[in-house]
Image 1 (spheres, rainbow, N blue to C red):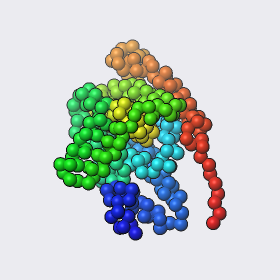
Image 2: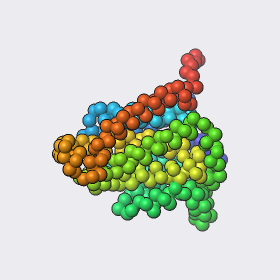
Image 3: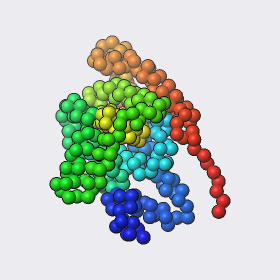
Image 4: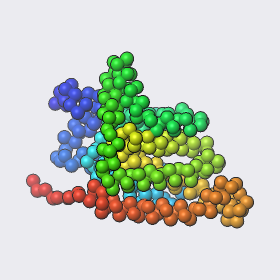
Length: 337
């Protein structure tokens, strides 16, 4: 039966076979509820693996790790992942692989395999995979041109991918190219019509830029800079690509803001604040406030404000997640068989 469905290209399974095999595996169980359960387990497991690994690698304090974890839980859209399955799963695999590939530089063959799985799980998976590979090859170059180009990346992808499909006659490019055209044709008001949900997404990407620019000094100028610059490049490219997709495709914008940024932004925050703590231990409060590098001094002086903003935003977003987002309409029923 699976071979027949793949041959008939049901749900594009001839190209995105990872989803086909997952569904086939779930069909062998006694309940279809295993599909969202497995998906949620992989997604949340991957996110907490990244957070725990980063905390261990940089000796992050327990309170900082707790705040970063709560930020992830508050800003990740559980119901959208639960109901959507494929795109969030592809993004999760790609993001987890990108962290170990770009920052810790461990399990690199496995990371490339993760990129492969992400690309064959959903057409959207090719976007974070492409950004991760771009970050790996351009981390030593200035990001201004690349970031600017990514603002309009979706429109360019909608033209390039169909061309590659025609020239190479590769079905994968054809499927992804069709999806890119579909996403590029989505009007901006498709997402703005969501009202409060749209405002929440905009607020989170604004906070993400604040955190990115605040910790940029520590990622570029600290003793950890050589190992951090690849992941910093990946994070900045994701942010600028998400901003650009808000212009060209509201659906892609929402997926990046709801599935990718909630994982990478808490990592940026807790690692950056940990490096700041190390500088404080080395230079002392007075020297860091008044006699250190002006950029470092300024960041230290407003560190309390940054903590307040992050904690307050996390608390408000967590309240919204439970009281105003799509999760509010969820119902849990016990079914007897």
